[in-house]
Image (cartoon, rainbow, N blue to C red; front, side):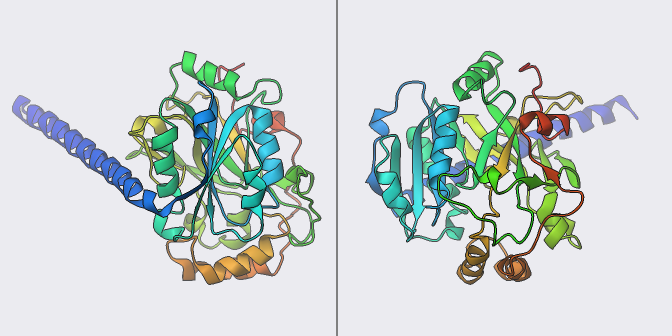
Amino acid sequence: MKPGGRKEQAAMGRLGNLWRAWRWRRKRQFRLLRAFRKRGELVPVIDRTADIAPGAIVLFCTFRNEALRLPYFLEHYRSLGVGHFIFVDNASDDGGAALLLGQGDVSLWQTGASYRASRYGMDWLQWLLIRHGHGRWCLTVDADELLVYPHHETRPLPALTGWLDDSGIASFGALMLDMYPKGPVDRAPYQPGQDPTEVLQWYDRANYTIIRKQDLHYLWIQGGVRSRMFLHGEPRRGPTLSKIPLVKWHRGYVYLNSTHSMLPRRLNNVYDAAGGELLSGVLLHTKFLPTISAKSAEEKQRRQHFGEPGAFDHYYDALTAGPDLWCEASTRYLGWRQLEAEGLMSRGEWG
């Protein structure tokens, strides 16, 4: 190749990078504008954000009819060191909102608007993150997700975020791990306030695929029990299990697709591209409590959870029937050290 040709290729490469950077910047601006527009759908019920202590870790969550989960959810995250909770209640009618009103560390907004049209609640949370998350470590999770990470019993979130700050790391990744009972999912007994892992004691430790998405610089992880049971013929339609729940927030940051990926793209670098390991956690996904069958029947009618809702009718029908997700290869949950040994989380240099 002639020298001039190499220069032309280098110039074209630089132009291509500038074009892609402009496109991602525009997409980020569009997401921020969506959140600004959607703010009018939120009605404040109790706003205690003025009481948030300096340096406190703030949790953000959208929910609908989660009164069964909320007592332990609050207990778990308080024990980890969350200083304040910001909830969006999407038209619950099971008493969950009333439960939250009596909690002094909770701020609550309500909306009856479409969950699907708000990017599955992310536009609402995006606005609240802009207003109340700037400059803070923020944890964004669903009501059925319980974060665990190496040494979480003895090193609470302020210790973790302090270490991340000292290491110059602004985002923390986690694998969403589906937990399930042995036997029909609609028959496992559960009481409010109980640790869900006492009922959902099992998970799939294998059958995961990982693809490095070059455009967004993130890992796309799929698999687990839902792919095994319901989507084995269509693995690419399986749920995305990689998430970025914990971020040192800036008002210019956005979540793109739930908490799976972010802009700016550097926040998606929660793995070691050189083949090593970075500190990461696991979100224990407690979706399969005994209410799952009734919830699945309801969501099939509401059609608020998928971009192509009708394409997943068979999934809802299967869950409504109360399947047994357990198999001989299922693994019993024993704690974070087991998850680390199986490669589902890493302590990296956290020690």
